Figure 1 (cartoon, helix red, strand yellow):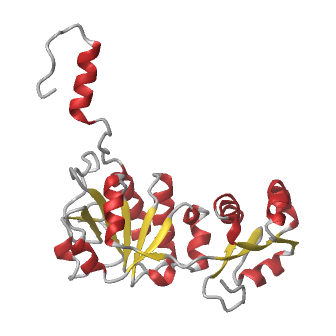
Figure 2 (cartoon, rainbow, N blue to C red; figure 1 turned 180 degrees about the horizontal axis):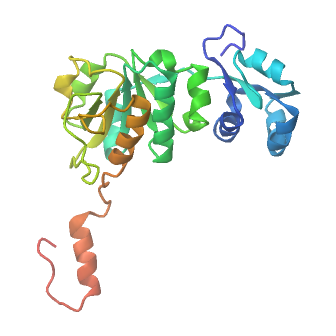
Figure 3 (cartoon, rainbow, N blue to C red; figure 1 turned 180 degrees about the vertical axis):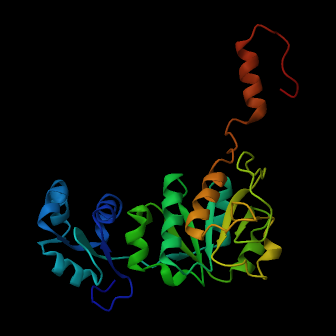
Length: 277
């Protein structure tokens, strides 16, 4: 990967939270760190380790920080180079079904604040897989997203999903797609989780009404939470609610029902073995 300024994967992080998260999770992506004097102590525990990786440290004024970050920054910013996100494959959905992983698909998301809110919610509930459709891919290296996410983008694994409609058709037997739309769909019952035995869930979050080509691939479509008689929530507010709801879906237990039944029988005094044992 080239280290030139023209590198398309050149990403400048700004904000102490974002930089500290990068140091913790992806230190090898760092090239140089600029910090205002008041924030140097927060980085001190990491300096020796990062200097061994060749990361440069500089103490800078607020004006210099903002010039380097090309946006206002008054604490810390860092230059990073990121690898290209991989393209999702059908085999990936098979793996995610086996490990019962929830996937979030961002389609038609164009505002940095919206994608940042999605990343923060995913991080909060331990969801790692974030698929970006071709209409959202351009936000992958938008510095505003990484700044507003406050380090959460380091916790998610970004993948690109080209030809999303065709992909979802191919994985329909492995994956249940739940759509979140601004105004179309059923009301979310926050007290009742989605149940999809034998498959895993993909939450499709759309920045506008869901693409007509994707409607046949969606098994359950819900509108943004709230009353239809009141102004709708924006995506940055609605997505975390939906992600929290999806995350509450019970995961299948590894031991299975019959194994648990046998274990209970083994602990009891009843000599009669359970059925189908």
